[in-house]
Amino acid sequence: QRLLNALFPGEQPDSSVSLDTARKEISAKASAITESMEEELVKRGMFEASPSSVRQHWTLIGAALLIGGVLLAIILGQFTVTIIAGIILGIALGIVGIATIIVGQGMPRKTPVGAESAARWRAFKRYLEEIKPFEAQAAIAEDPLVFERYMPFATAFGIDKEWLRRFTETNAPAPRWFVPIGGYGYGGTGHRS
Image (cartoon, rainbow, N blue to C red; front, side, top):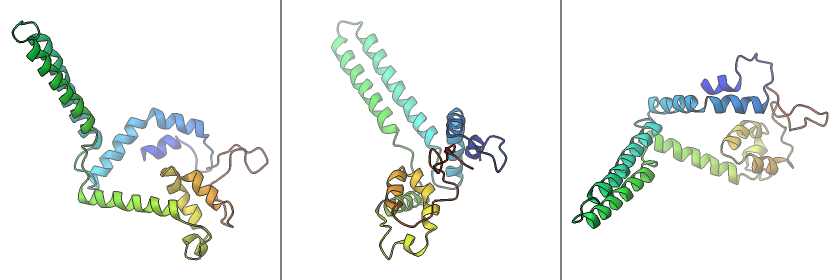
């Protein structure tokens, strides 16, 4: 809901929102949107805990180890007897801290339900990447509206340009909501709600 509110802040159903305005609204509310999405993923059982909070937890541990390593090297480096050992221990602890920060970014763990869902989305992306619009068994051959229904997914997966390129030569109708930049040859605004 926060994403929709950022995209269409107080807008009426038939109004237009420029992409620049939408981008600014989303950027300003990105952390709140991400937090809401992660809460929803945890609520639906996809993750055991919020991925951001897990990453933050491991980043804090890694930072503490790194700072501890620097302090250990400084403190033990003050004594002639322990100078080399202090520097070696401090560097080792600092390296462990950096490694903890790096590895901690991959620590959010999906539940079995979340892992299955992620696998299904990856498979759907592969399907969209490999679909051939002219093959008889392609979904687009049986239902031209497949193009319109799948276009938002292609956009979310970052394969929209390839998707559009592949389907420009078919008779698939353009989605009702799609207006190319510059409009349809009459100087349109490039967006429509």
